[in-house]
Length: 331
Image 1: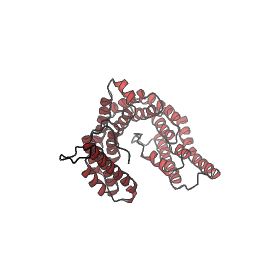
Image 2: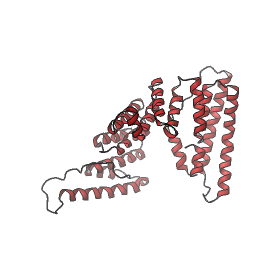
Image 3: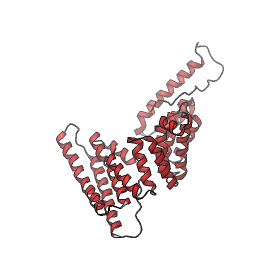
Image 4: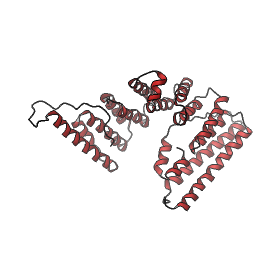
């Protein structure tokens, strides 16, 4: 969802935050030689960045109540007018330079950012026809097909993007996410079963992590993917979250990871370790999630004791870890 469509949907800063965190792999390489055409496109792209930053700032600080329809419509119109300035720059540039593959790619990226994905896809196609060796075009088209079109086209386009540039982690990450989300389509396309589909997605995530080992967002995406795998691959999930903990940059990030470590340990029946992780979370921002996980921990411990000793007699053997058949409840 683009910035403008996020505003129209919710008018909440959280929606904008989701947009900013989205990784599209957009890459427009400007040649070193500063010819007039290149300079013009550079200036437009700079205006594009400035406009997006300005609009994002407006939305993030907007305090117009949802019930104030007149003020809301006026605010939306203000955003449209600001973005139209950039859109007019792109259309004028492409009218004068209809063979500019970089121009079509940049314009498509702009249209995607403002929520006009269908128009963006048309510009990406124009760019691909002019420069089929640019991996960013294939990646962006794959993003489009993964959300709005035939997902098998997304698989093929991600593969081509990676073939053209096997050093870009975003391409592997996007491909992994698409395989993971569209497992049924991936099973049919690659002629594999569900567990093999998980393996393929996880392998793509790991390749992305080799290329970007300090990327916490990537590491957490990879670790979170284990929640959807049944039965839960406990050891792998714990290793993934432990890796995320190692690359977390501050206490806030580390405590967020510790909540996930607690969650996996609860599901696996490792209750003392789950307790230890929860005890290390002190940030008030995580208080609600910590309480939920503590309740889950108590419930799991109670169920474990009941399963081990259903008739109430005293047991002399240690409680085994409960079998894990799926991901734990969300914090």
